[in-house]
Image (cartoon, rainbow, N blue to C red):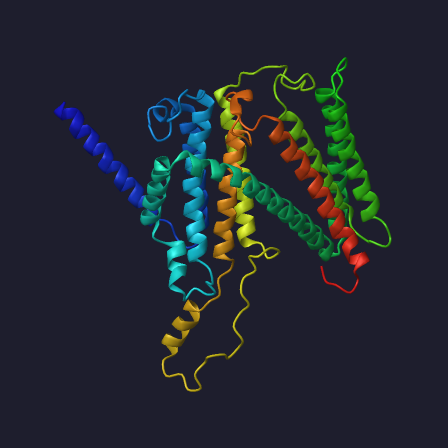
Length: 414
């Protein structure tokens, strides 16, 4: 017993030292990676509690106060939502604290990039406190999360449009034959992949002998969008480029596949999964890893994007606030370094993580508290289907608007 106690104490001390070493190694440049790591950790914790915490939550009186104990799936969803709420509050508080940070001289700049041991402790405390909240608050957060997750998906669409237009402008800006050929090749590959992908979708989700009119309509609509993108982009009045049209077409087809693949396993038109309701741990891990990478990329790019609300403040006017007779050259240089403008909006960066917390909660719960139809599957059910499909249609609408808006309103800058 004494030996076990000593071993536990040694392990705890080593863990604390290791954590302290990692935290002390986080620099200004690696701060965003650290936030991404903390967010990824929250998803892992939510997934683990989703699998193992149900028996514990059933014994907590302020959570399980029902006359008839709900199904295990209800407690799984509750655990995910409580972890997500703690994560949401953590990043929302940081977003509020970072409002108005313009340059690195602001003391809050150090708070954004440092203090990681205290941040991790606060994050753990917030997540733990969420398990003492009444169910009504969690239910309200679950409802709010659907809107926040939808807003996060909209941000993803805007970021994608910004990315493909910037990609096209960069290659065209080289004005060299090699880059024009590369642009054509990438566009051709994307369109070939789009139409090949559509053939696979017809094979997987419109099996013979079944009435799959809905799936057929969704796939055909996505194909119509792909063709329409090319026609409008190459129209002389628009004078667009085929590269953004091809990339957006492929992305819309991917969203179509993602939506149809989320159909319930017992749906007769979901031929991809052969009516299986079981799922392996490796499949769950792969799905979670894909979610982490997608959410982290969107959050980091949104925090750095100049298209959204995250435009860095303009540089100070040359000579502003400079003394006529500087007496201390070193002090002046140090002052310049401290007053250097921030490169992205800290507030918007944390807001994206807040929305991403809602989005990940919806993925892990199937966009609804009624997860019984999905069992242990991640992101499966009709709500997940329609979220993906509507996101694809919204992507198509925004891209079309980005093409025709300059033609309809030539006096406005887009």
